[in-house]
Amino acid sequence: MITVRSMVKADLGEVSAIERETLSPWSAESIAQELEIAEAIQIVAEAPDGQIMGWCACRVIWPEAELLKIAVKEIDRQRGIGCLLVENLVDALQKKEISSLFLEVRSSNGIALKFYDKHKFLHVGSRPGYYTDPPDSAMILKKNLSS
Image (cartoon, rainbow, N blue to C red; front, side, top):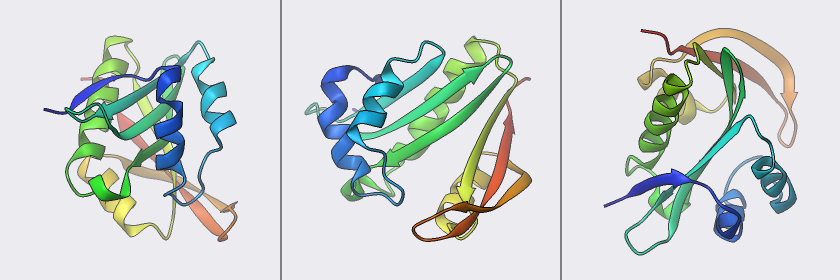
C-alpha cells in the first residue's frame, strides 16, 4: 500500500533524484530550503518498501495556496501517484480552510494539462515567456477548494 506523508530531511536524496528526471528540476538546495518555510506543505508518496515514488510542494498564503511542484519517479508514472499526491494535498489545504489552489504549468505540457483538468483545475490566466530551457509560456490554473 502506498503511504502519503509529510516530507522530512531524510527524503532529500530520493526527492532530488526524482527531480533530476523532470523538466525544470529543482536543485537539492532549493528542495532543502523549501522544507524550512513555515507556511508550506511538502508531501511524499512512499511505496511499501520505503522508496519515495513522488512528491509535491505547496506554499500557503491564507486564504490561498500555490502548488509549486509535483513530480513522480519516471518508473512510477501513470500509476495514480500524482492523483494521490494532489488528493492528499487538497485534503490538507481544506483542513486549513484554504479556498483556492493555484499553479503554473507549461502551455505545451499536454499530459499535465489533462491531469489538472481531471482534477478540476480551471484556466484563469497566462504568463508569456515564463519558462526557459526550453522557452514556453505558463498557463495559470486554479482549483476552488471551498464546498
